[in-house]
Length: 297
Image (cartoon, rainbow, N blue to C red; front, side, top):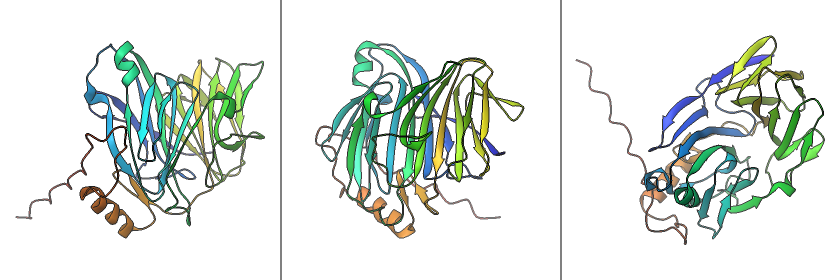
């Protein structure tokens, strides 16, 4: 039933730690999902350093999906969008042939508070990798919810699942779900899609006789439903869908073509990608490649 368990790898992004789950060497994608970062949880005091902000940077070939449990982020991008995101909402940014954006903690810097959420990247399918860039924001009314009497609450963040469909424009068959489970609650993930995974964001769940704690992603074999039992109060993110084919990922760029990745790197290095109008005074430079290994003696 469980094909692989992936443990998050903690990374410091400059005063703010994330748990990186995808890509993983032994399993780079789940359906179209090619990147999955667990942000926080992190408590900030008012007036924290601006180094925590994510300065303007580029993307191609993907959609970014930002979803918060706690906190607030201000998004600004090169198609003109300026949008705050709060818990239970979705920011969906399609990079396509190229977009730049920043993520700032303006309100949290003023008031302080806890930041906790997930940022995922969804690879665009063949034929749509070079689509026009776009941005959309979706509040709770666009995201179907369900609550059972035995302790399950669910929100469909994107795609189709459990007989519901979110009002988020996706580009290939997929699903992305937020479960909140009370201790002892049971819930089942159906075998609707060929590639499925569950990420434990908080608490502990039991699957197939084993207990899994926060920070672990369970990747499932296709073809059979999966039953979860909450060992404690828990938050679980379900994700997956139809595969879109092999994809390359380098820095913030995703593509089926190595040449396209190299072109994107050259465009950013040369300043040919427009910065957000509302945040164009700084940017993240292209990382330098690591030095070659010393020659063998």
